[in-house]
Figure 1 (cartoon, rainbow, N blue to C red):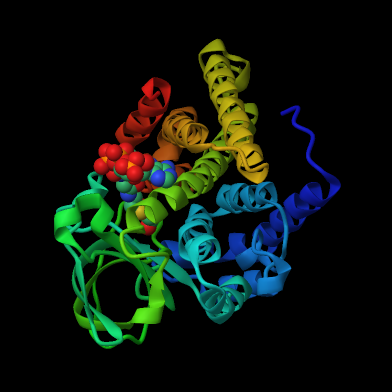
Figure 2: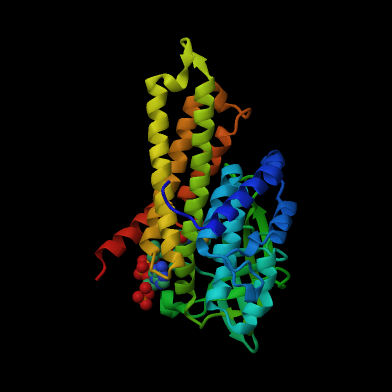
Length: 379
Ligand code: CAA
């Protein structure tokens, strides 16, 4: 791709690529058996990867947003599991505090999140409230110096492993969307109950849990932003989060393409490599074109974000297109590998299982289309 990255960004790419090859690749099999990559996250913390776009003042690496997207992209080529853990931790686990927190909240939580001592999670979705995020039912009632939270959340990435949860609850049911508030909830909060682990199609090393609040007492000073600002906080951070999921999708798609090209050059049928046969050659050409288009959309959204431009539409476009590309490229990769692609001897079946959720979490593809069309028609 003819995007010119800075020297620092290229150094980040090389560092993450080397780290992923040396430290993550050998651990993929264990994650495939369901092991959470604790040690890997610890090492990522010591390299500054758990707080890439966080200012140095709060213990982060103080790097630009594009470097962060480069990291998710490179990590996800080797492990989409590690990619999503980092994306959720940073985009929707840490950034809400950075963008909307008080100075006290920032000083208390961000250095721990940025160093990797803490892991972050984001609790918006509920059993009855997925795409219609504003219809959430979890309630927060203010009593003396605390908010008492009651309700259930589902599909919480990093749940059960996280130290802080950004939780959305209604403080005023009559006000609808404008009655939703955001809270920072610590893992040891009495009444925060970690429930069932979901048995997912893919991303086996990442934990996804149900959790509930049973008269959970959250100190009033852990209200994030103002009462009633929660929905906007969720939406604004999802805009950023969606660029991360686009980068994760891009990583999966690129890995599927690279493995397919490699295999097609080696695999001989009818007396010549299958790469030189048009049925496969055309497939590879279509896969590569979609991967590069995803790359352009993803890095355009990152560039806009980094330069303070509104990028909700572009983030949704990047996520929509890159996640579709991940799914299609992984599907075609299995076709290129034929029967071998359907076995666990090659990674392409893992890419296929990992890719699907990119079209679902942080807003389904249908929601991305709603966001894009609203931008096209507003005003
Ligand atoms: N930034 C700031 N404010 C925003 C915003 C944004 N991107 N998008 C909307 N808002 C504001 C609007 O301006 C509006 O406020 P005003 O009335 O003051 O103008 C308010 O929010 C309501 O906006 P809408 O009318 O557009 O709201 P809606 O109810 O129609 O919903 C939606 C919009 C886009 C469909 C939204 O509900 C949505 O994004 N749903 C998907 C939820 C989602 O992505 N969930 C993912 C869960 S998290 C996850 O998956 C993480 C993980 O663990 C991997």
